[in-house]
Length: 66
Image (cartoon, rainbow, N blue to C red; front, side, top):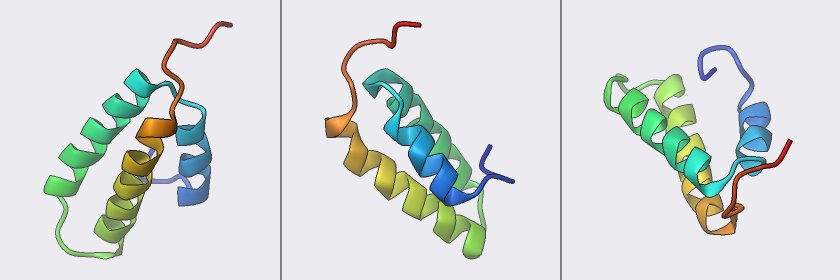
């Protein structure tokens, strides 16, 4: 998802996630950031990581019902 998707779309996706799902995405971002050389892509991942961390306290606590 992080290779081809616009960061604004990823942020809107983060806003819909529950706390557990957002934690999983944060862990995924951490692993991707560690493997990146300094570049625009790494900067984008760092910005998404910071956004996700800021959204964590605001995230829904329960699972979504379909």
